Length: 279
Image 1 (cartoon, rainbow, N blue to C red):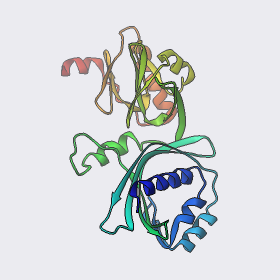
Image 2: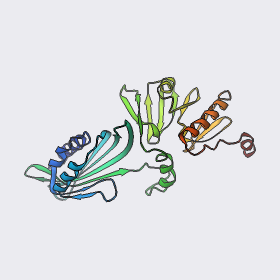
Image 3: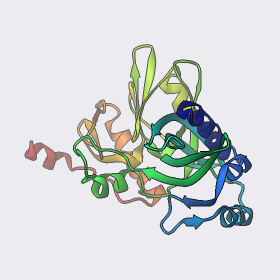
């Protein structure tokens, strides 16, 4: 078995699978395939049962995968290999909203008569890693659910031109804040940072409902604001952003307004005198 060649075939099958071309995946499945989905109790045994399950699935979902990494693993059996695929997938719902997860697909593949057969397909979702953790995700419950899963889990995708002229499609609910960085901007999200050639004003004009202009060099997503005082904003992840004295009252008022409109929990806007006493 040429493991590298099998890895290429597996990657092509998975890409086509997420382009809603499912037949190549089903054709490659062994008659006794075991399919384990990302959801609890989502286990299907045999190709016949899997084909029936997909045939009964009616939806208009679309998917976009990116950052695909393929890791082939040889085994002690020259006719068996393991292929690990890791990537980010955006699920685009019929109403245009999007949710984003990092997925991992593990395929156990055998080779028979120069044809590959998938014996096991295990799909799982990766949780966001916290740098404070080493092995166990100790901060998952306290941080990930609060920052990422709060409110509606689905949202529209924000389109942004990256510095290499490609289009970025970001989940609006995962954007923390945006800042100017010399000749470009940096979009800080829950899952990482992205660089763009578009100005803050361009992004503010395009998505006025998403951001608050708290400073000439910063846009902030109000859903991640933990507190505000003279003259700073602190986000839920601990990052602090400056607020000019002249904009302070306007930003504070807008934060209160946004919290009321979204019916979110009230942002703890600290009393200035109390804050001074605490300092």
